[in-house]
Image (cartoon, rainbow, N blue to C red):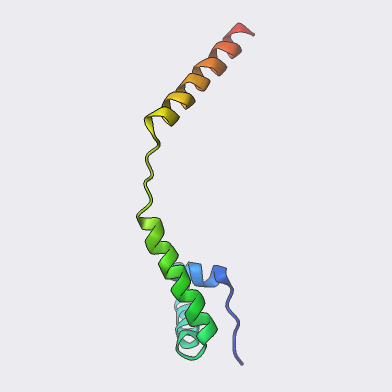
Length: 79
């Protein structure tokens, strides 16, 4: 019987969150199922793109957040 894998299954596999049994099943599917191969390749490409994302906000964003926090803090003190 052929098991169908969801995108979530493959994401868990990419991040090493699957069991040994799941790993074996997914690896077998990758050898035999071109649809699983294609979806897996797309997920790998996405994870590579995500690794290059800049996680640091701009100075303007930080300033806006801090200004809003000060504003909210002043409002709570005034109440």
